[in-house]
Image (cartoon, rainbow, N blue to C red; front, side):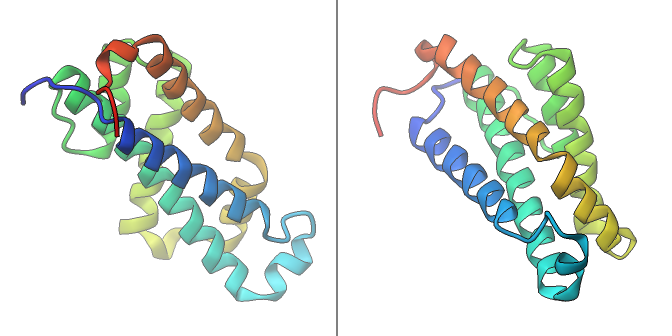
Length: 152
């Protein structure tokens, strides 16, 4: 894989999408467990928003690795390892991203094992971790603007 420049357009699109998915989760009635579970569409929406946020975060990481370093990460679980190896993310953030990749894989391949209660707890207690990893990627991109293309 050839190292080129990270696309500012891809970065902006993925960051925007992740923030939109998180905002959509926060619009769900997470403050009231009974209200959340009263409408089964809340669980389906939470699952969809969460999965798409995780996929966009992992896709952003994969784009940084592929374009910025010529590093091919073919599996989502490889993204966190590559970002740690290339010192894009801290060990803590890479560890969180690795867990997110594992959870995303569970959501896609072992969806029947994900309980509504588990989804509710993740949406209530762990959304800040997505933002923390995203902020780590954004900080690295700001510190390494020479690795980004010039325009959109």
